Image (cartoon, rainbow, N blue to C red; front, side, top):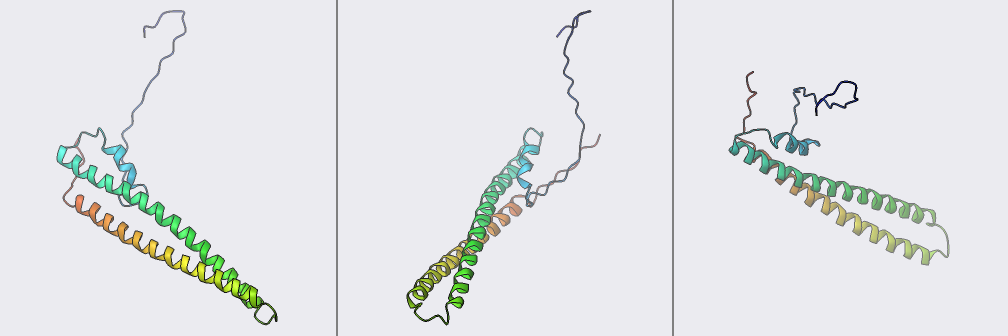
Length: 150
């Protein structure tokens, strides 16, 4: 854009400042590594290995989110089970509460079965997460990035 005397002009100045940042691919922010790799001018073989590791890390993020959801549901089911147990203790010596007791026992059986199912799901997802972590480590085993000399 040409500048003219006596006229108002707008100039956008883009500043760049080199920064050093350490990103561990297996930590919670490991998915950010893809932002640094894209257009980073890396050798093709290293870019390929990092791309594979980043793809697996994204999958790990999805599994971690699933585990968090399952754990939350498990905590809710455990809380419901505790409430039902408290209710059972409260009516323990009440005569004529047999129908309510049967209902509470049935509810306790359902919440216990749900808790067991959710706990198995957490275990399965944790195994999948460990396998993915091993795949990331394998993909990065021989990757070495040296800092360029100025």
